[in-house]
Length: 262
Image: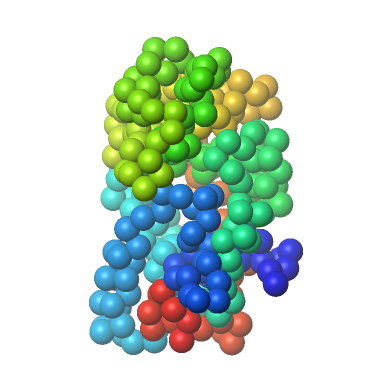
């Protein structure tokens, strides 16, 4: 059973990478993790690491380092992260993820509350969600804002565009149907996310809600105007998030294959 100290899910311990077995459905299967793809690249990196230095780099560290370098490669800030994490031997389940991870339509209260429990303050939390400046949202998580009527907090002309991207109120959950988070610079880690939500062009309900809520609007406005401030708060938030509830030493293991416990 996953206890309170292990929620979200268990911290940075590579639990997401574990595959389902005959006995349980992994958190990877959760609707909350829909859209998580390309795990094959993690496996490719792990295979290369095991050939070069077997049993040294955990899957948890691999994920953190890959994320850090991905941000920098897309034009975002480079920042240092600590290493030495171990991989969990505990299987977190689909049910655990459904219970403890925020749903795609979460509001500002739930978002700030979840971040506060991780000791992440409001500007840091809003900077972390600014990572939505890259990537995409799948239609299954968009259509509730488009059908049967358009969400009034969504820019009307943008809603027309999204209906082209997601023409059905019942999209095929197995199809790769999506819209880019940022149409202007979709693969650049910049502060365009905030400029978009100021125009009410955020894809998720939370995106526009952060601009409309008086508690968070000042941070959205400042990050839209000051990319350095966004980068500074993002790094601060990531430093906390990547060190949340990590396993070290005998608390975990270094998996040989990220999909399975040793």
